[in-house]
Length: 71
Image 1 (cartoon, rainbow, N blue to C red):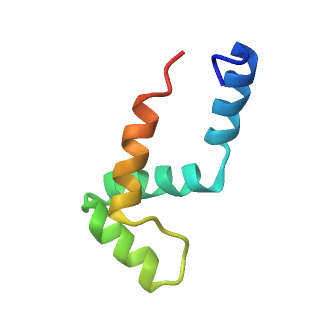
Image 2: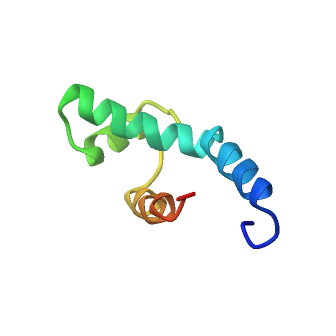
Image 3: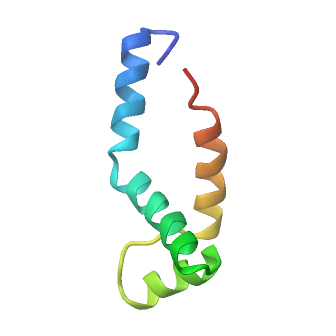
């Protein structure tokens, strides 16, 4: 989006940060940190309780994606 219009890029980043996927991603890291458990345990707990979760592979892809969100 940056190549099209810088303001569009900022809108895209804002939309991403407010997205359900990003909120789930942050929830997983926040819970792992607060409860001093690993990410895989958080994922399993969310999965078994029927809550939204991300797989380990999705989290790894999002880590790479988020590293590219610099402006």
